[in-house]
Length: 249
Image (tube, rainbow, N blue to C red; front, side, top):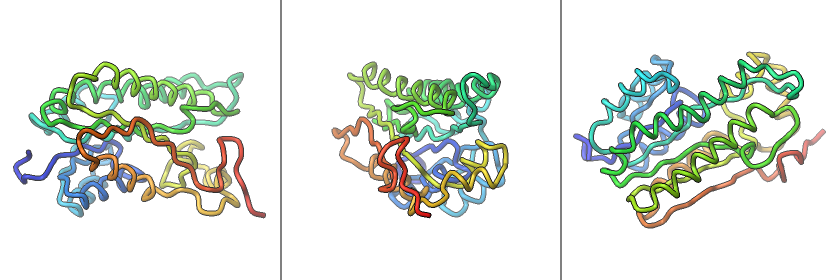
């Protein structure tokens, strides 16, 4: 246990959207939360709000990951690998390969790096590893090439981890959301073009929210220790499949 006698959780990408919401929900569920992200001002404010801790961390930096691990200490009960992102929506024929490398680095390599570094603490704490995946990791769609490939990679990491940790007291779960209207995701994908970001959700009644996903994160984290939810796929009712979304005129 931590010095506060609360179980300890780490949330990467905690500065906004699903990460910030998940930190709040985990805190409500009784966890002391380490909020990890690059934007220190945001996570300091969040940590103060939820009586947690803030650790500035770029998950693609080995030095930052080592500092996060040092802040965690000997035991960890929950790791939410939430940091990630999509960049661009061009076809493979016009791929921005630098963007593809960035997506693979943050969605796959960073998940492996953070998990590897924190795994001894997770084993000691009989912990739960949660990876924020995507329905893009299950079904390809046009224009999604780099992000689809990266999230398929993240899914493979989850499934491999679960096999390799079969004899350890650690649970491994992927949460795979569909259409979530959260702060920053679409805006980042379109390099700050608000009109393109808004078009993603145009006419969609009640896309998922960050709170919807955070509620599931807290649910996963608080199941009995012998219960492992391998993968949770969640979409808004209006999204029957990756390519089939009901839009009202």
